[in-house]
Image (cartoon, rainbow, N blue to C red; front, side, top):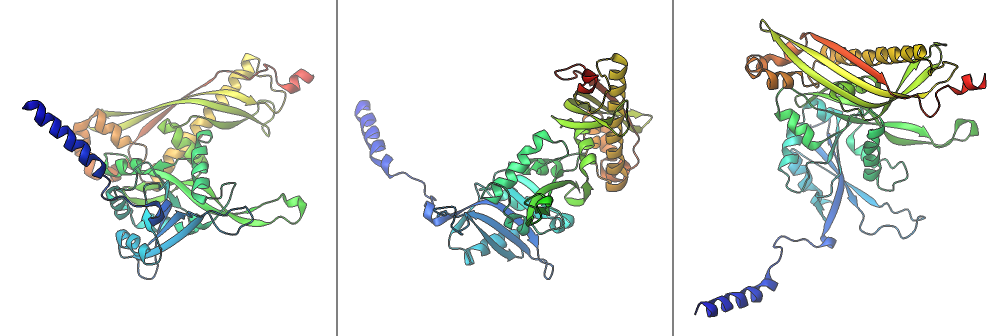
Length: 397
């Protein structure tokens, strides 16, 4: 009897198995795959403007065709959800957001606050939390998405390629959506991300005479937030100092004056950075120790400074230390006194090490952070001088 029931169950299972399927499936010819989004606000009525960069399912058959591989679809609404829904009124396909790679918000939206943007993004089930979250500096986000520059035909891929190139440049500090959300909702640290800037570039060297000028998008400064609002930017040097404090530096170049000639500069390839922020509480007074340890290699010697000699080598290392201290201190002053936003995680480290003290100052930490004392300790170490010990200028002599 049991065997008969089991056989009937198996037979029914295989009978109905072909009937199963995705109840909410959508055919490829019914959807528009969105790969980048831009969020702006209208000046007149304050409505959100959402721009979607959609893949053209019928790409040009040859390079001489004027058809674009993407389509920009723009719609507005009182809310982001309404703006996205209004896309359907002008676009013949249902927008599909699972493949979005980059989100760009205008600095106007960021200055007013991105809470609505974040809430919409984390509730949208199609959007992934690892998309790049960027700010368009002094331009609308839709303009950034509309500019086609570089080898890639699709602007979203071009922008993503620039961002990924940050591994070779610590003057860049990009963030994904998940990082932004964690810091806004977390304790004692505010979010940052990189900004896009629209620039005019000449396609040919100026000496050729007829250089064509075209608009391109480049990474510019680091956008600094206080909670969900944009409060300012860090320039390239300050961003480099910020990344060193945060231990985000994988590779960068620092130039220091030569020992023989102050107008010449020795290039140092920074290969390793370790940093630590340590809070201290003495008699209910809070302070911090910022420790940055940097290792690098001498990459270029432009004159006859003989770095194979220990005395000259140590002089270069001392200048390396002073240059690093300059970047770190300049960044700390800018963050604390001008931007007044704890993007370094001072509060977060206090919360981890002294939770009771953090509970006392948590509510007024934005005000306390501006005046909290700190000490900077920088250690530098030069490992190697390259494939040759003596510079080429010394060898020639």
